[in-house]
Length: 265
Image (cartoon, rainbow, N blue to C red; front, top):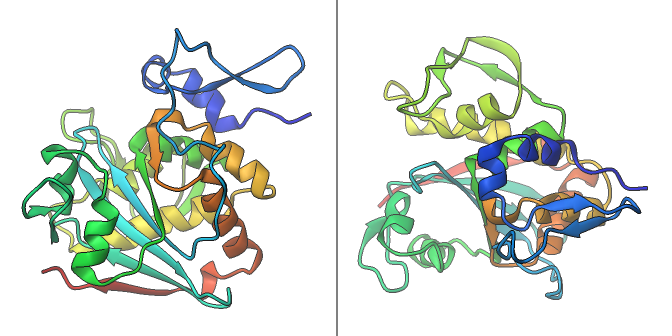
């Protein structure tokens, strides 16, 4: 019998998460996952699992805060032969031209219109091939962190991990085990006293810990991603993303990843 992911239990225990998490799953009497009735929840905005999965090598991951601003952009690039892996960080201040918009910073693209086409606008502006993208709200990232039992990070300084307007919470220097909310803040809340590169290194720590530690086969990881509902949005089937995550994990490519940042324009 498949067990419901731990992170989903965490999301369902939160009133706010339940309100936002359209397309979330509950257990039927036989223990299988089933969608909530249509009159209770809208369709999830994650790509439909009925779409055929395709192999992807270059995945863009964008993290979105509560103000609908893109605060972090990372591209995972796997070589076509599956033997090499690189991580490309992109400054959200970089200007792009999404469909139907003029020049806007990546961070504000969703505020000016929608997130549709943002990945291809980034690809065109910076010359980075992108096969697909997934946009994660803060609650989605927090849920993924809790789904792997929390993560261990090594903080170089004292960092605030709560957004403006929230009660102040901090991560202190040194090694620490972070649960979902704090880990998501560590990846997404930039300090005015740190450089963009320093901030991106924190994001990389969290993303690596989350995706490298996803357990199970492709179907299991696909189940985890699909259960995020409207807290995540992808323009390729979640099975395609799950396949890439499993390939990177099984080939142990995270530890040898080449990390770079494209210059902002």
